[in-house]
Amino acid sequence: MNKTAMIALGGNAISPGTGSGTITEQFARTRESLEGIMHFVHQKYRICLTHGNGPQVGDELLRMDLTHVQVPPLPLGVCVAGTQGTIGYMIQQSFQNRLHLEGIDREVVTLVTQVEVDPDDPSIKHPTKFVGHRYTRKEIEPLARQFGWQIGEQEPGVWRRVVPSPKPRYIMHGSSIRTLVQHGTIVIASGGGGIPVYREPDGRLEGLDAVIDKDLAAALMGRIIKAEELWIITDVPGAYVHYKTPREQLLGDITVDQARAYLEAGHFQSGSMQPKIEAALYFLSYHGKRAVITSIPEIEAAIHGKAGTIIYNPNQGDHCENS
Ligand code: ADP
Ligand code: MG
Image (cartoon, rainbow, N blue to C red; front, side, top):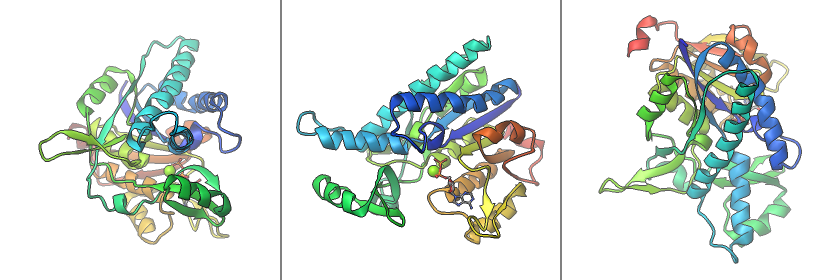
């Protein structure tokens, strides 16, 4: 194995956009997605995987609200920890089965991962991250009143709950994750962006009720494990300029300077494509060699440089591997 890929799987890779998101549907979708991820195994990559948890953590929160009279509810931070376990289990088992089918002897493990954030991050007071089900305004307003939700309109007519989304600062247990990845173990870590924690003045860790952006957490993790490549797998073939207009154009190979210029020109929507480009730029400002944004069906071609949006740093020579 000669290359390390940090792979971030979007929520759609686990939970189908259509359907009710039953566990059967989630397992089926996960298995389909792993067909794409297997290309990294065939190309002998060391692999660290992370995933989103938006729909799942939203379901957990709703479950708490609906059962709080009978069972003491768990706070959001603990729900994120729970989804790391459940989604990690789904991916781990499906992945292990797929490897077994091909007679490949590699272990897949899931790590409960805490991520330090700034307790004064501006998003704590101004939540922006959409989680859970989509409702009409008429449906969500009574729920918001009953359960004290903060809500926002994601698209015209589509209302969802919003929660704080502080930026990741530091991934705990990074050297353990790196050791496992370097050993060849396939590691699923920092799921759902990681469990948000902060340090008390005396150094103790405390949990925080928020959801960290998984793309930014993946970039930080990619840096820590010294991955050469960051892969952001989503539901579009890549990043577009003039997205959803008649001038829309898929970006192929672009430099970090080009990506930054498009970002500053406002081509990427905040909360969806923008954090992916920011994550790519962050990753490439350390030892990363390329960041790829693409969809599951395009992975194989993208590995060979023939699909996806590939962002690279033209000034970065091979010295980067030792830094
Ligand atoms: P994920 O769960 O993979 O993070 P997101 O919904 O957060 O998925 O981000 C992917 C979405 O970003 C796409 O489905 C697309 O609708 C949206 N998007 C916004 N701006 C762009 C753009 N300029 N190019 C491509 N996709 C974009
Ligand atoms: Mg997203």
